[in-house]
Length: 169
Length: 462
Image (cartoon, rainbow over all chains, first blue to last red; front, side):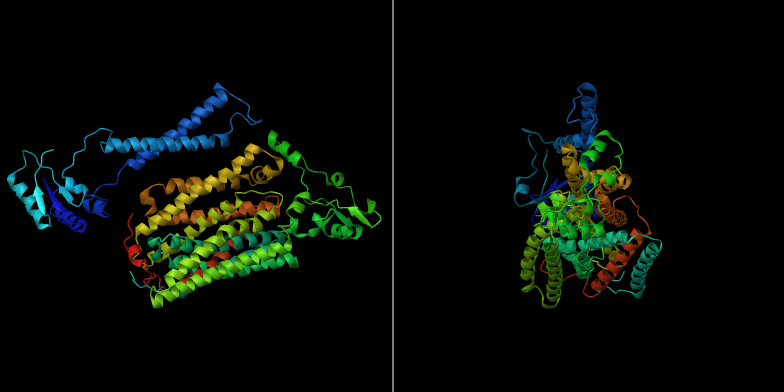
């Protein structure tokens, strides 16, 4: 079930009101990023950057251990009289690999978390949310009582929703 | 909470800063009484002057860069760098003492190139005698690069030079030509090559030019900003933008040349093209951290109600990001010389990383990179006043150390440690600096509410 709003200010106020009444919002769909909506909805911070740190650290360790193995063990070459184990000359590669692992890893994690992939069919709840309308959605199923549905409808219309629909996805 | 927009400089705080100033001067006095050399005194004086003058001029850079970028968020913060920038007048006066000393000769900081004698190929015997009477017969600055290069290659201690053998030409033993001239044994080819840029007259003109331009812009910017408070955003906003653009052009040139003239020329045989940027970023982080500390102090006292953790987050991002950038420059500078391994270039690092300076040398790198990198990485850390204040204090001290590491081996040579003199001088300068900054803070409303970007700054959200 979802309600459509015409303005982001009304939506943010509505979100606060609905949450104050103790109803659980499934998600909000907006045509553009709305500042302050995350806070109003009480979303927790994404863990994407923690994943990024782990990917980056993996890249650092991969580069250092691989170069260490090659230059001192597998195929030692004398470059300009420097010792085989010359940390400064490894730093650029280590840096690059850290960035590469972190960025590619975060990109793929992002796609996975958002269920995005080339050719994937996206579920659009209402086409107008890609243009000028703001939607607030609630999950309902066969076990949801009519009283509950009525309560949601009432809250949506009270908080300024211009249309209220039910849709099966 | 006191929601006042005007800062009251309490006598308690004023006495604290005055106390710091007096304590620092006393410590320096004790240091001198304990027999610290005048060279060490002047080295510290130059070091702290450049550091605190740099912080105040970088505050001008903060204001102008954000003004040009139309960064609305900085309006609630901007009175703090404005107050800091007013120290530049006092910093310039302190620097003038160094500039005058190059002519008057009461300090030996720029001794290596100050004397024109070393750039003359042929000199008269009288001039040579006069020079050697004052400076001794040793070739003061002709280092045996090959010897040091070998020491670096094989990780051995360099053997001491025997100056008696190396300089066997006293004026008496020389055979002057018909005009009474001899070949100058102290002739320095590298300095002669730089003579058209690095000579006393041009150096003094440049130094004065930097100081006049910086202080002029700092004072004019402040004046515009205060007029805007009274008259509203009329012509002053546009005037500030024009002045900001002019300053950024000035700064683009002077930020590099300033460090060549005042820091790199302490060791005039060595040169680095990255040096200007490296110093610029070091001072920039110190300046950002000073802004953060003053801001957190005011916030804790209940001022600056409109300012929230989003503004703090932005300043924290600067401290974090530029610490990484500082490391990038440090390493870029280091790696090229390490890879090239040319004796006259890597000498600068041999003086630091292969002597008693080495512990502080590596501590400088680790503290300036790993510490802010690991503590400020999380979003929460940049929005937490306690964490941010701790990191800011550490970064100010370590960038002070960074400048110490550049200046001291060049001015004093062998490692003498950080003692009562260094600590005293820092405390004295910090006390004077804070006295000026807080005095200026009290002179104007803490938030420039008439600025056209004020509303935008209030709605700042990241």
